[in-house]
Image 1 (cartoon, rainbow, N blue to C red):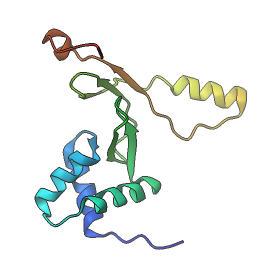
Image 2 (image 1 turned 60 degrees about the vertical axis):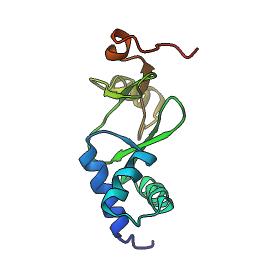
Image 3 (image 1 turned 30 degrees about the vertical axis):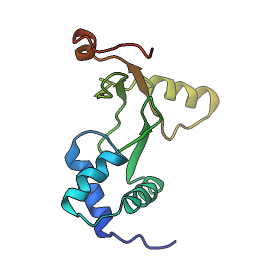
Length: 136
């Protein structure tokens, strides 16, 4: 197996994701990273994110519009409620699949290695603030 080099772009991507405290899209990550390293190419960020995802260094998910988001791995098991109006990502208070995973393992002999739960809807601020809450 080929040795993975800890390059400056990879270090920067990891640092930006950890400091963000929330998942970021590749575009958001690039905007933050290029402020620290102005000559950083967008393609470098995307290439590194793909490689880091394959190695389990970043967690990847999708927003309602299909855009990918990323967060540093090792931050614990998290699921999100995603507002369709403002795109805010709110932590789901608990994982609803633990019992299901145990039952599937017992009855089907299937070992779940990972899962993603994303709920889409409208946050309280958007509902109360009069922002649109439909996709018309």
